[in-house]
Image 1 (spheres, rainbow, N blue to C red):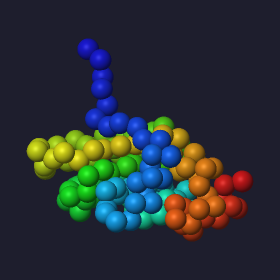
Image 2: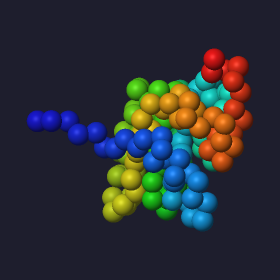
Image 3: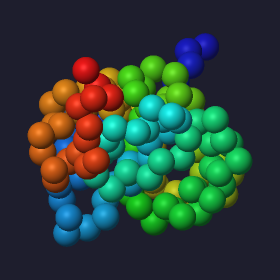
Length: 133
C-alpha cells in the first residue's frame, strides 16, 4: 500500500501568479512559522504558528471554506508546512466532506519564495534582510 499525502505541492512561480491575481480571492496562504515569522512574509498570508496550529485549525477551515486553494508553508516546507496541511486536510474533510478545496504546500517554503521575490512588494511584505542573511 502506498501512502498518498492529502495535499499537492505548488512551486514559488505558480503561487506568485495566484497571489498577484487580485481580482478574486483564489488562494489563501497560511504561514505556520513560529518565531521565524518575523522578517517578512508572503503578501496576504495569515500566520498560524505550528506550535498551536491544532488548536486553531477548525477555525481556519471554517474561515477559508469558500477559498478554492489554501497553501501552507513554513521556512522550508519540510516538516511544519506539510504537517499543518495534513491536519487541515483531515479536519476539512470532516467538516466539509463535499468540499472541492485544494490543499497545497509551497515547495521550498518561505526561504525559496523570498529568494526569488523578496524585492517585489506585490509578493513579499515586511521583508527584513537582517533575518535572512
